[in-house]
Length: 142
Length: 327
Image 1 (cartoon, each protein chain N blue to C red):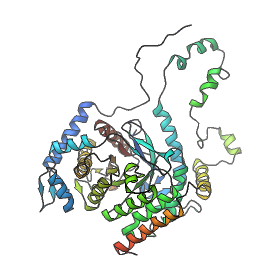
Image 2 (cartoon, rainbow over the protein chains, first blue to last red; image 1 turned 180 degrees about the vertical axis):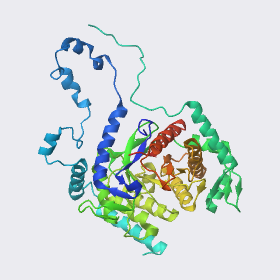
Image 3 (cartoon, each protein chain N blue to C red; image 1 turned 120 degrees about the vertical axis):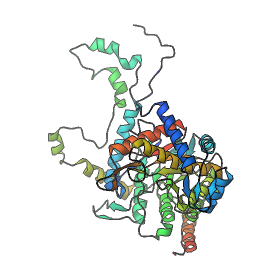
Image 4 (cartoon, helix red, strand yellow; image 1 turned 30 degrees about the vertical axis):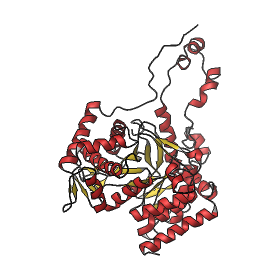
């Protein structure tokens, strides 16, 4: 709703228990939902090409659109979730019957263990820490 | 067959939702101005009272009540910028705040976590703040990083400073910070200045934004005004975020809640603009309905969705960037 109304920063990813608790698995799931929401906000493009009348007339009632050039060209415009599983139940069971939350939590765990963004240089980190300590002393809680 | 181009065909440019008509938005706006002038706002801190008074607002120093005349509030709406950039430690994460553009960020600020390794439900620590910042840095749809949880293993009086220390070290995206005093705000801005190479550079490329909360109904407490004043002076974007609960701290009707919410946010924006005209602000909302059976805020309800959408539209009408509850 907020996205459709054009809110600039929509917060809330990762939250459970009405804002008391943060859950990293939920965070990864919410990131996926955000991706899907942005897909909706982007909307439906109407052009001569996307209306595809020539293709429709050519394929007719008994064909399909799978092998058309246009399908190849535009297929990446359709939503592509990373974690939401669109397979049927049997295939899901064959792959271990994992709940969405569990798949997302496993990803969160991997990222927290392995991923490191560009670090801040040691001397700057030391100066930042000095400000923290100075503030603790200033306020009387050091 | 040939299909020639159309001349100037209007296009929808994506999906959207209509929340209010122009006249309804106008009525909410005028109702808020009336509340600011007639009921006024309680302003705890003397320095903030001085700024309001110098800016043309009648101030009662005994009751700490400030009346904000309509022209002062409207001036503030006009002088607050419509567009600005939140910068990341890594320039590839620089991010434009502009009415209508849609982005996401994480929740702020919880007090417990589900341990990512063990599943234990426990109090949050400084290490959690760091871990979540890194996870946020990795996730594709998160454009900024708010403090997800407050560290409970540090002194509460300076927790915001400790939290931001690990934010700065663990993400390269713009960060939302949560100081609860002018002292904390100043320390946090000094830390950010160290990272970018000085105060002038920070003013040019703010890699963080602060957040304050008026207390509903119609109060600007000291912690909020100290941070608004400090942020304005440093030209750090300030998110003025109201957290009303319809039926509890605001009228039970959603329209009435939007009026007090709007008045509270406008009061904060007015203080910012009277401190430093033209400084960047965000129009924020965490407002929802109160579940009157449970006497608790109902987060994740239809009401919060409707209010967030309504607030986004109000902010767009004011040509101000917005920050609302969503996921």
